[in-house]
Image (tube, rainbow, N blue to C red; front, side, top):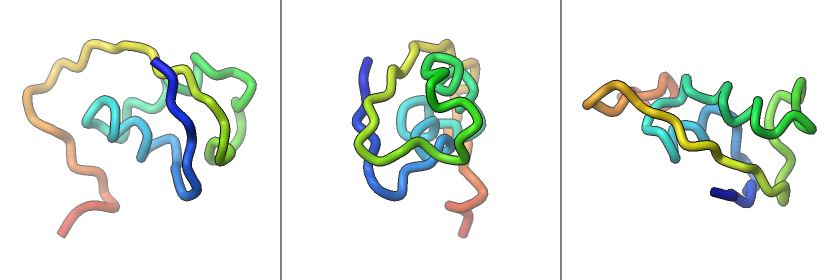
Length: 67
């Protein structure tokens, strides 16, 4: 799967969008080594989003989305 990075996207927000867990960003970074070390992916970049097995039935709420 491929994702076009939008302004304001971060590794954790992309992981949350695709996996329902903001802490599962490492597989995305590993799949896109050209962006390794960047604090966030550059807008307009095409990221490869790998398939991962998520072992939770509940969505993990990211810290930035808590009420």
